[in-house]
Image: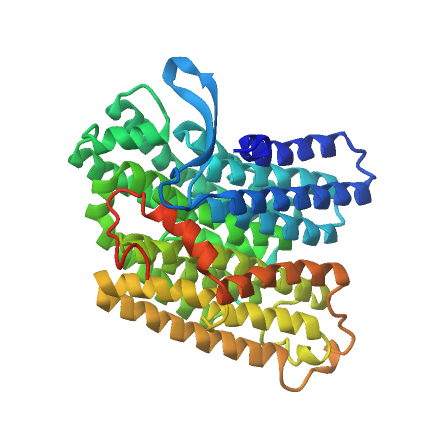
Length: 509
């Protein structure tokens, strides 16, 4: 391991925190400088994230967790600042880098108090990186909470309120609902973490040592089955798990564009990642006992989210409920407890993160120009907004699982894994994909094609900066769709090491 790789993970946390500190020192009037600092930091994070992914060794016999770095923090209770990545965390780090950079570029559209906006945005990003790379249970939870707290101010201050025909949603409502529900769920997670630490009783929060102790009988089957529902609901809420998902669409609608990109692109993945990192790794017997319940809830996510998206007339609500539906595939894949399904779930987290960031970038651009997201009013935009249409169509085709784009291979793996365990639920998952095709194609036809209303005659298309950001999101969608092998090799290395996972067909297809 090179010198740079030895310190790379910690600098993915330090850099956004340092960026926030630098921004604090800038005069508020230096808005352009704040934007350049934000975009420059995002570019460095993108480079570091790509380095982590490319440098990950997935060869046979390679260590499961790599780039390990440990600093003793509170020795008396066994808390260490311990970092590392496995094959599941590595693509999540790459996802964070891509969305952080493009989000920082899109955030340049923010005019009001840009400095403070970027400060909170980079604190959030630091929390996301810290969660994905922490191998100490205490710091895992610390960074998990750090990623959530800035969301309240980002939405309540810079968000937007919406008025519909029969109800209204203020930005303060969306922000408060999001934070209160996630924090309430975090209480369940914290209870489970403390219980694991005390009951395993080896005097450390080191996830790897706790895992080994649990596999040697350090935590009874009854205790695991009792604690797993706390983890499932606690983390599942952030992943949009039905019926605890209601904060998510309201939060999306109220949030500014770049925050929606990070919210759906990476924050929701923290919930699914938590189920894998804590639930599957430390409570394998509990996971096995509750897998069918999780499987059913994930399937409900898929169908409910798709039907709800089909009934919406606000573009952000469509994408918000679509995210709930697609996170259902992630939950289904996790619940299969087999290598194919879990590989598909991880790849779906990556694919959905990129796809939904692209969706929200485009929807945000439409709203900034038309000052509405109402699909009953918007029509014929393709003739005036060619780039906008192209990027929305690519995101939509990825969403419905078109071959050649990343969503296809991810969903195929989830379906194969699902049919191995629960064929009926797997079939319902495919039905959800069919419903997705209906509402996506109908939405594209309604908003972008057909006769254009004269009120949209002067709408400008995306700026070169917005085109660059959206184009950067399209690249991984195409790359994974056409050449998924490098991603699957990395993911498989992490999945095969998880306790209680059935290897199917040699660990992959």
